[in-house]
Length: 183
Image (cartoon, rainbow, N blue to C red; front, side, top):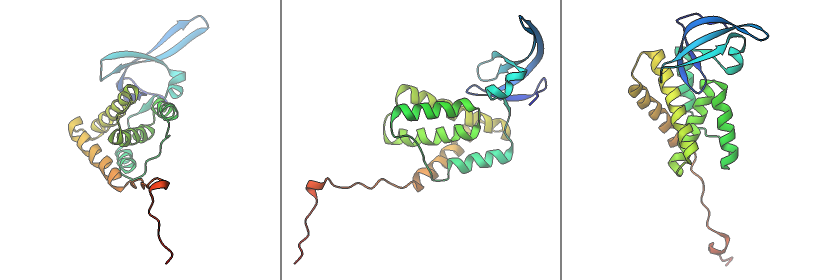
């Protein structure tokens, strides 16, 4: 996909950026065309080779119909995740790197649910914060609303999932079960 100067794009794990310029630079193997992006959240500059833009997950900002899909994901009542930390962290890291806002929504939902049950590790807490930032900032951009308003809507959708999520059935240990008589 090709982008134009001035267009807003999403750079995975960093959020919204603006294409400031498209430049051709010499390399030892020839010339390469690059997008120069300015990341809005921290005003940093990133150079992305045009031919590798899809490979790094550079994409346009989502549409209004995509926003509805995100809220459906956040509030659908399903939570899927690895039970062990290592597998869960790898799976979530892979989802965050894809650049897909829908994958980021799944990470946000899973880690928020986990955070309600127990304290997250430093790395998972940081990932949770990043996922929430990426979701809220992109939706705020699309809808032209403040991040605070979008955060409230995201929290409401997540709460719908947690209210609908099945509670684990807790069984007594075998040695403590009551015996019933056959008489």
